[in-house]
Length: 159
Image (cartoon, rainbow, N blue to C red; front, side, top):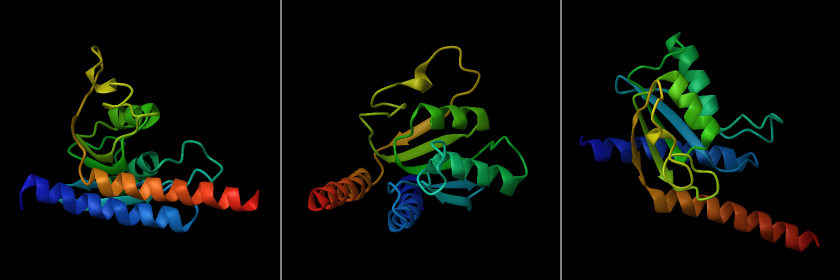
């Protein structure tokens, strides 16, 4: 399997996690971590359910991967997420020492990789990682757009 085929496969797994988020009323962002060609953790946004602004899919999947591997350093790991990560999440990835990030949709409001901030290009970081952007971007973005469109529609009906 080529790298692109692998990236598409695992992004599809992250989209399944995003579906779970949406079913529970959360913003549909999903993430998975892969190490040694094995999926070791999956997660989705749970900021509402947990009343926790840090419960982003990326933060949760990193915590689970660290527990699964019994190591706070996720050397060699690739994190797949359906939406470009924010500053907090990219910071956590740097701390975890992941090898690579793959994301789908771009986030012009909070994206910290290429859209708004370019955190990984800062000089002086003690760790950086490779990234691939735009994998299944249209599907990932459409999922988010539909979610927020439904939210706006349900609010308008209540008014």
